Amino acid sequence: MENETQPIPTPQLATPSQPQTVFVDPQPQTNVIPSSYKPISAWGYVGYQLLFSIPLIGFIFMLVFAIGGTKNENVKNFAKSYLCWLLIGVIVGALAALFFLVMIILAGGFAWSTGA
Image (cartoon, rainbow, N blue to C red; front, side, top):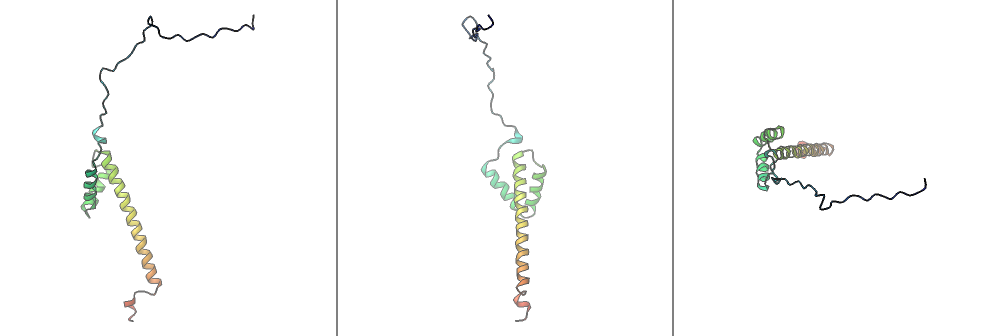
C-alpha cells in the first residue's frame, strides 16, 4: 500500500456560495505633486538662465539657490548644474589661456617686445 498514488487536490475556486470580498477605495488617488517638487516650465528655465547670466548678481543668486535658498528641488538642481557647467567653463578657459601663453613664450615672445 505504500506505492499507491495519492490524488492531487484541486484548488478551491470561488463559487456563488463563497463570494469574494472586493475592496473599493472611496476616494480615488489623484496625482498630487508636493510644492517642493513642482515642475518648472520651459520659460521658467529660460528665466533662470537669464538671471544666472547676469555677471555678479546672477552668480550670487546661483549660489543662494544651489545651497538651498528655495524650497523647490528642481530649482536647486538647476542651479547646481548651472554652477557645475560654469566651473567647467572656467577651468577649460584657464587651461586654454595657459596653453596659449606657454605657446607664445616658447615661440619667442611677443613681436612688439623684441623691437623688430
